[in-house]
Length: 368
Image (cartoon, rainbow, N blue to C red; front, side, top):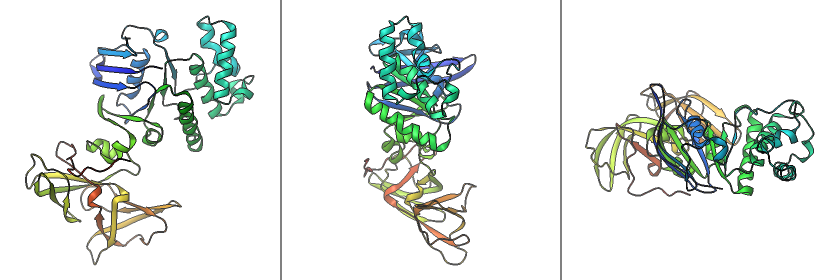
């Protein structure tokens, strides 16, 4: 196992700056997930760690060794790609042993490592099969086994579940989580799916346009996002956003007003912001309460989704074109066509300034 440290790492392709001054530390044995929208640079960052791309500027260390100039085979990393990339003419055993044989590992050692890896991944009964006789989940486990058999210090995963159907993704998420628990190895995992990030990670790195937007545990990112981007990206359904204005504030808190809700007293310190300044109010669907509204007041319910154990209620906004979402346990009293007032929980309301940075609450929210 090993730690990874990136110090002002940059990557430029021609005139396009992909990775921009990334500073990041990944601890020995941590499970870290890179997450962000398509094109944000997460796969490129993983390939820089693996040595599949060269660093344009900055320093990358694995353990105590600076590896900028080391080829992939000397970095002690194993990589699992989005595509299984198994050799169709080889058996499961031969696929898993291939990298070891290339490294001219002794036959006895090859057999020991392949069999040990097969036991961990529950592939012992499949060793004589060829890839065409395997399910998608089994093929992905073989691809993981091929990387693990080399006993790398770091395991890298590049969107390994994106080719699987929904139920199999859930199963494989659990397999990977159990694998990390058993091995205790350092794992770096790339995905665009924030549900995978939330369920797998010890630490999430949110990337936006080649920069690190925020680093923290899933709980920290969900409960205390530092920017509107993180607040909107982490969480499903996404956070609701409403335009607001600062009425007044002190270091102990502030009062804001927003169309459709009215005035709220909140724990955030307004800092340098003054009365009349434009803000954005954010509240997650489970913290957005509803109450009956009279006449033409309030927001109209345009859709109600029943999901078994919970209900999503979609509301037509007064400003903008993004529907607001209320989430609650089933059953629900709300119906399409009703008009309702919004009743957010002040303890769980977020505020963002014109630069999309979060205003800090003096009475900090607890993180479980």
